[in-house]
Image 1 (spheres, rainbow, N blue to C red):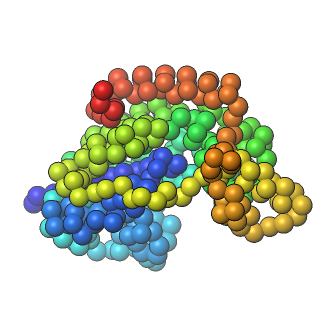
Image 2 (cartoon, one colour):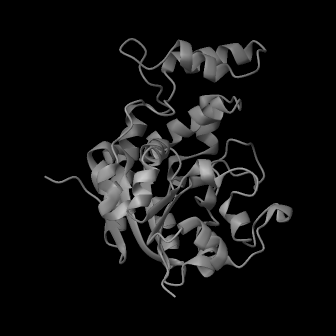
Length: 301
Protein backbone atom coordinates (compact mmCIF):
# COMPACT_ATOMS: atom_id res chain seq x y z
CA UNK A 1 0.00 0.00 0.00
CA UNK A 2 1.31 3.46 -0.95
CA UNK A 3 0.80 6.00 1.80
CA UNK A 4 0.33 9.68 0.97
CA UNK A 5 2.80 12.18 2.34
CA UNK A 6 1.29 13.87 5.39
CA UNK A 7 2.30 17.50 5.86
CA UNK A 8 1.00 19.20 8.99
CA UNK A 9 1.19 22.96 9.52
CA UNK A 10 0.72 23.16 13.29
CA UNK A 11 0.93 26.93 13.77
CA UNK A 12 2.10 28.20 16.04
CA UNK A 13 -0.66 30.53 17.14
CA UNK A 14 -0.18 34.23 16.35
CA UNK A 15 2.22 33.62 13.44
CA UNK A 16 0.03 34.61 10.45
CA UNK A 17 -1.56 31.15 10.43
CA UNK A 18 -4.99 32.49 9.46
CA UNK A 19 -3.64 34.41 6.47
CA UNK A 20 -1.77 31.33 5.27
CA UNK A 21 -4.83 29.12 5.71
CA UNK A 22 -7.09 31.53 3.82
CA UNK A 23 -4.59 31.85 0.99
CA UNK A 24 -4.27 28.10 0.51
CA UNK A 25 -7.94 27.37 1.08
CA UNK A 26 -8.94 29.78 -1.68
CA UNK A 27 -7.43 27.47 -4.31
CA UNK A 28 -8.03 24.10 -2.67
CA UNK A 29 -9.84 22.81 -5.78
CA UNK A 30 -6.86 23.61 -8.00
CA UNK A 31 -4.49 21.92 -5.57
CA UNK A 32 -6.66 18.80 -5.52
CA UNK A 33 -6.37 18.56 -9.30
CA UNK A 34 -2.61 18.18 -8.81
CA UNK A 35 -2.93 15.52 -6.13
CA UNK A 36 -2.67 17.75 -3.07
CA UNK A 37 -5.64 17.76 -0.70
CA UNK A 38 -5.81 20.58 1.84
CA UNK A 39 -7.71 20.49 5.11
CA UNK A 40 -7.69 23.72 7.11
CA UNK A 41 -9.63 24.89 10.17
CA UNK A 42 -12.97 25.01 8.33
CA UNK A 43 -12.63 21.29 7.66
CA UNK A 44 -11.02 20.32 10.96
CA UNK A 45 -13.13 22.12 13.56
CA UNK A 46 -16.60 21.42 14.77
CA UNK A 47 -18.36 18.24 15.96
CA UNK A 48 -16.91 15.14 14.37
CA UNK A 49 -14.47 17.09 12.17
CA UNK A 50 -11.49 17.31 14.47
CA UNK A 51 -8.60 15.00 13.70
CA UNK A 52 -8.92 13.37 17.10
CA UNK A 53 -12.53 12.48 16.24
CA UNK A 54 -11.86 11.48 12.64
CA UNK A 55 -9.19 8.99 13.71
CA UNK A 56 -10.54 8.19 17.20
CA UNK A 57 -7.36 9.33 18.92
CA UNK A 58 -6.94 8.66 22.66
CA UNK A 59 -7.31 12.33 23.62
CA UNK A 60 -10.56 12.86 21.70
CA UNK A 61 -12.74 14.66 24.30
CA UNK A 62 -16.07 13.56 22.77
CA UNK A 63 -16.01 9.82 22.22
CA UNK A 64 -19.62 9.84 21.05
CA UNK A 65 -18.48 11.71 17.93
CA UNK A 66 -15.53 9.45 17.15
CA UNK A 67 -15.32 7.75 13.78
CA UNK A 68 -14.66 4.12 14.70
CA UNK A 69 -13.98 2.92 11.17
CA UNK A 70 -10.42 1.82 10.33
CA UNK A 71 -8.10 4.80 10.02
CA UNK A 72 -7.15 3.71 6.49
CA UNK A 73 -10.77 4.08 5.37
CA UNK A 74 -11.05 7.59 6.83
CA UNK A 75 -7.70 8.57 5.35
CA UNK A 76 -8.79 7.35 1.91
CA UNK A 77 -11.88 9.55 2.15
CA UNK A 78 -9.73 12.56 2.97
CA UNK A 79 -7.09 11.98 0.32
CA UNK A 80 -9.34 10.83 -2.54
CA UNK A 81 -6.28 9.37 -4.22
CA UNK A 82 -4.07 12.42 -3.60
CA UNK A 83 -0.35 11.83 -3.08
CA UNK A 84 -0.08 14.58 -0.46
CA UNK A 85 -2.43 15.45 2.40
CA UNK A 86 -1.78 18.89 3.87
CA UNK A 87 -3.29 19.66 7.26
CA UNK A 88 -3.31 23.09 8.88
CA UNK A 89 -4.78 23.38 12.36
CA UNK A 90 -2.88 25.10 15.14
CA UNK A 91 -5.25 23.90 17.86
CA UNK A 92 -4.32 20.25 17.34
CA UNK A 93 -1.13 20.58 19.41
CA UNK A 94 -2.92 22.61 22.09
CA UNK A 95 -4.78 25.85 22.55
CA UNK A 96 -3.07 29.18 23.09
CA UNK A 97 -4.15 29.60 26.70
CA UNK A 98 -3.69 26.62 28.99
CA UNK A 99 -6.97 25.66 30.64
CA UNK A 100 -5.54 22.51 32.22
CA UNK A 101 -3.41 24.26 34.83
CA UNK A 102 -4.35 26.26 37.87
CA UNK A 103 -4.50 29.96 37.30
CA UNK A 104 -6.22 32.54 35.13
CA UNK A 105 -7.48 31.85 31.62
CA UNK A 106 -4.87 34.15 30.13
CA UNK A 107 -1.86 32.05 31.05
CA UNK A 108 0.05 30.48 28.18
CA UNK A 109 1.19 26.95 28.84
CA UNK A 110 4.68 26.31 30.14
CA UNK A 111 6.22 24.55 28.42
CA UNK A 112 4.59 25.68 25.21
CA UNK A 113 2.18 23.06 23.88
CA UNK A 114 3.22 20.32 26.32
CA UNK A 115 1.17 17.63 24.53
CA UNK A 116 2.38 18.44 21.01
CA UNK A 117 4.72 15.45 20.69
CA UNK A 118 2.37 12.78 22.08
CA UNK A 119 -0.52 14.06 19.99
CA UNK A 120 1.50 13.95 16.79
CA UNK A 121 2.75 10.49 17.73
CA UNK A 122 -0.84 9.30 18.13
CA UNK A 123 -1.87 10.75 14.77
CA UNK A 124 1.15 9.34 12.94
CA UNK A 125 0.49 5.89 14.39
CA UNK A 126 -2.89 5.97 12.66
CA UNK A 127 -2.09 7.50 9.27
CA UNK A 128 1.64 8.13 8.70
CA UNK A 129 3.86 5.08 9.24
CA UNK A 130 6.86 7.02 7.91
CA UNK A 131 6.11 10.05 10.07
CA UNK A 132 4.53 13.46 9.60
CA UNK A 133 6.35 16.40 8.02
CA UNK A 134 5.83 19.38 10.31
CA UNK A 135 5.69 23.04 9.26
CA UNK A 136 5.89 25.66 11.99
CA UNK A 137 6.11 29.43 12.18
CA UNK A 138 7.74 31.04 15.22
CA UNK A 139 7.61 34.59 16.55
CA UNK A 140 9.70 36.80 18.83
CA UNK A 141 8.52 36.52 22.44
CA UNK A 142 7.53 40.19 22.74
CA UNK A 143 5.45 40.11 19.57
CA UNK A 144 3.98 36.71 20.39
CA UNK A 145 2.86 37.84 23.84
CA UNK A 146 1.59 41.18 22.54
CA UNK A 147 -0.61 39.36 20.06
CA UNK A 148 -1.69 36.86 22.71
CA UNK A 149 -2.76 39.71 24.99
CA UNK A 150 -4.87 41.13 22.20
CA UNK A 151 -6.39 37.69 21.66
CA UNK A 152 -7.34 37.51 25.33
CA UNK A 153 -9.12 40.86 25.10
CA UNK A 154 -10.93 39.76 21.94
CA UNK A 155 -12.07 36.66 23.83
CA UNK A 156 -13.51 38.99 26.51
CA UNK A 157 -10.87 38.00 29.06
CA UNK A 158 -9.89 41.49 30.16
CA UNK A 159 -6.82 41.82 32.35
CA UNK A 160 -4.33 44.60 32.90
CA UNK A 161 -1.15 44.64 30.86
CA UNK A 162 0.95 44.28 34.01
CA UNK A 163 -0.91 41.20 35.24
CA UNK A 164 -0.66 39.57 31.83
CA UNK A 165 3.10 40.21 31.67
CA UNK A 166 3.54 38.79 35.17
CA UNK A 167 1.66 35.61 34.25
CA UNK A 168 3.48 35.22 30.93
CA UNK A 169 7.19 36.12 31.20
CA UNK A 170 9.09 36.33 27.93
CA UNK A 171 11.33 33.48 29.00
CA UNK A 172 8.34 31.13 28.84
CA UNK A 173 8.21 31.54 25.05
CA UNK A 174 10.85 28.87 24.57
CA UNK A 175 10.80 27.76 20.94
CA UNK A 176 14.01 25.76 21.34
CA UNK A 177 12.32 23.48 23.84
CA UNK A 178 9.25 23.05 21.63
CA UNK A 179 11.23 22.24 18.48
CA UNK A 180 13.47 19.83 20.42
CA UNK A 181 10.43 17.99 21.77
CA UNK A 182 8.90 17.80 18.31
CA UNK A 183 12.19 16.53 16.93
CA UNK A 184 12.26 13.70 19.46
CA UNK A 185 8.67 12.65 18.76
CA UNK A 186 8.52 9.26 17.04
CA UNK A 187 5.75 10.39 14.71
CA UNK A 188 7.63 13.40 13.33
CA UNK A 189 9.78 12.85 10.24
CA UNK A 190 10.95 16.37 9.38
CA UNK A 191 10.43 19.90 10.67
CA UNK A 192 10.46 23.10 8.63
CA UNK A 193 10.45 26.38 10.55
CA UNK A 194 10.41 30.07 9.72
CA UNK A 195 10.19 33.44 11.43
CA UNK A 196 6.79 35.09 11.48
CA UNK A 197 8.63 38.38 11.05
CA UNK A 198 9.78 37.14 7.61
CA UNK A 199 6.46 35.58 6.63
CA UNK A 200 5.74 37.75 3.60
CA UNK A 201 9.27 37.46 2.22
CA UNK A 202 9.19 33.69 2.72
CA UNK A 203 5.61 33.15 1.53
CA UNK A 204 6.54 31.26 -1.70
CA UNK A 205 9.04 29.04 0.12
CA UNK A 206 6.58 28.27 2.92
CA UNK A 207 4.04 27.23 0.31
CA UNK A 208 6.61 25.08 -1.48
CA UNK A 209 7.47 23.30 1.77
CA UNK A 210 3.82 22.58 2.44
CA UNK A 211 2.41 21.96 -1.03
CA UNK A 212 5.32 21.02 -3.27
CA UNK A 213 5.17 22.01 -6.98
CA UNK A 214 1.43 22.70 -6.72
CA UNK A 215 2.23 25.78 -4.63
CA UNK A 216 2.33 27.92 -7.78
CA UNK A 217 -1.47 28.11 -7.63
CA UNK A 218 -1.48 30.05 -4.35
CA UNK A 219 -1.36 33.82 -4.07
CA UNK A 220 -1.55 35.71 -0.76
CA UNK A 221 -5.04 36.96 -0.01
CA UNK A 222 -5.13 40.73 -0.24
CA UNK A 223 -6.98 41.55 2.94
CA UNK A 224 -5.37 41.52 6.35
CA UNK A 225 -6.80 38.57 8.25
CA UNK A 226 -7.43 38.77 12.00
CA UNK A 227 -5.76 42.18 12.53
CA UNK A 228 -4.34 43.17 15.89
CA UNK A 229 -5.39 45.98 18.20
CA UNK A 230 -4.19 49.55 18.23
CA UNK A 231 -2.87 51.20 21.38
CA UNK A 232 -5.96 53.40 21.43
CA UNK A 233 -8.26 50.38 21.13
CA UNK A 234 -6.65 48.65 24.11
CA UNK A 235 -6.96 51.82 26.19
CA UNK A 236 -10.67 52.03 25.37
CA UNK A 237 -11.25 48.38 26.29
CA UNK A 238 -9.53 48.73 29.66
CA UNK A 239 -11.39 51.96 30.41
CA UNK A 240 -14.82 50.60 29.52
CA UNK A 241 -14.24 47.33 31.35
CA UNK A 242 -13.08 49.24 34.42
CA UNK A 243 -16.34 51.19 34.28
CA UNK A 244 -18.33 47.97 34.41
CA UNK A 245 -19.12 47.44 30.74
CA UNK A 246 -18.99 43.91 29.35
CA UNK A 247 -19.35 42.21 25.98
CA UNK A 248 -17.25 42.28 22.78
CA UNK A 249 -15.50 45.51 23.77
CA UNK A 250 -12.28 44.68 21.95
CA UNK A 251 -14.07 43.81 18.71
CA UNK A 252 -15.90 47.14 18.74
CA UNK A 253 -12.72 49.03 19.62
CA UNK A 254 -10.78 47.30 16.83
CA UNK A 255 -13.44 48.29 14.32
CA UNK A 256 -13.62 51.92 15.42
CA UNK A 257 -9.92 52.44 16.18
CA UNK A 258 -8.02 50.25 13.70
CA UNK A 259 -4.26 50.36 13.40
CA UNK A 260 -3.26 53.25 11.16
CA UNK A 261 -1.00 56.29 10.78
CA UNK A 262 -2.65 58.05 13.72
CA UNK A 263 -3.39 54.92 15.77
CA UNK A 264 -0.20 52.87 16.16
CA UNK A 265 -0.29 49.18 16.96
CA UNK A 266 -0.46 48.16 20.60
CA UNK A 267 2.82 47.01 22.14
CA UNK A 268 2.83 45.08 25.40
CA UNK A 269 6.52 45.76 26.04
CA UNK A 270 8.64 48.90 26.03
CA UNK A 271 11.82 49.38 23.97
CA UNK A 272 14.17 47.89 26.57
CA UNK A 273 12.17 44.69 26.98
CA UNK A 274 11.65 44.48 23.22
CA UNK A 275 15.43 44.58 22.76
CA UNK A 276 15.85 41.78 25.30
CA UNK A 277 13.22 39.79 23.42
CA UNK A 278 15.10 40.23 20.15
CA UNK A 279 18.34 39.06 21.77
CA UNK A 280 16.66 36.02 23.32
CA UNK A 281 14.94 35.22 20.02
CA UNK A 282 18.18 35.42 18.04
CA UNK A 283 19.86 33.03 20.46
CA UNK A 284 16.98 30.60 20.08
CA UNK A 285 17.30 30.65 16.31
CA UNK A 286 21.01 29.97 16.53
CA UNK A 287 20.24 26.83 18.51
CA UNK A 288 17.32 25.73 16.35
CA UNK A 289 19.42 26.15 13.22
CA UNK A 290 21.87 23.58 14.50
CA UNK A 291 19.29 20.87 15.14
CA UNK A 292 19.45 17.78 12.96
CA UNK A 293 16.35 17.21 10.87
CA UNK A 294 15.19 20.82 11.12
CA UNK A 295 15.08 23.00 8.01
CA UNK A 296 15.16 26.76 8.65
CA UNK A 297 13.67 28.87 5.87
CA UNK A 298 15.54 32.14 5.33
CA UNK A 299 15.06 34.98 2.84
CA UNK A 300 17.36 34.84 -0.17
CA UNK A 301 20.04 37.52 -0.29
